[in-house]
Image (tube, rainbow, N blue to C red):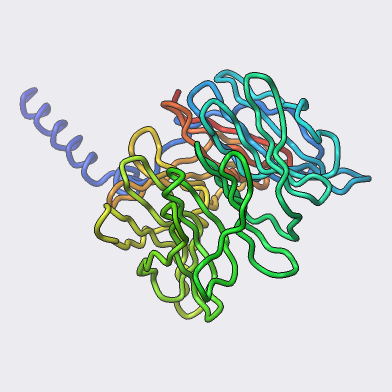
Length: 357
């Protein structure tokens, strides 16, 4: 009798495991225990986050601007030292009108695109401290910035149209783009002779451009019809990944294009209309990005590995009505996010979260 009872108990447990609603309904959702909240020194709300980049586990920088009653906006810079976020107020132009944009690591230095009183320049931080590199002309719009050892690029627009400014470490030149390019939306660099950009065509649609050390050329990437490009992720292995959205009957859906050096492949992960601009390669080899959360009190992140997409949530935040990571980066064996959180009854303030480490 006892033996029969044991068999029945085992049978019931096995059935429960197979048909458990929790096991069946949520295999693609990871609990919040992987993410933890990090304190961030306050900024004048509302604050806007522009970029986040890390050199390793012990150094990351977050940029943006904060509201100011007199000046409109003022630049905002935070540094992660592996243990805590601190605010940096020692750079040229701190406390003056302007904002900070893209962060790049060039050798042992940190380079940041700065809009200072309406004029663009590059902040450089070395072992000796901060310095600036002036741009050769003032642009109406400073759209993006990329820098690697041996070269830096700033793209934007002035009253005469598109401008691509190149710095070789000694002087600036203005580079021409292929015919039909109306506006460069963004760019990224792997080396001084391998730079990619995504641009609007004057005839409609988008194009991917590539600088080979001699000229900008149309890379002839077979983008999905009716699509936008949000980002291009370049890796030392030669792999390239394009993230964007395709519009079909006015409805956007996210797409990924991967390039192995010979062939482009396109996939449509279940991300809805997610904006893939903050997509990064995580320490686990998967692609990660923050996505719109279905929970007002928690952030949400997507992980893409092959054909499988999973989601995880950040820590619960009491009285939050909008938790929104604005930028994501890999910091050694961890992922760091930086963004804003809006608590009921107040304006958005800064937040940061970490997974791993």
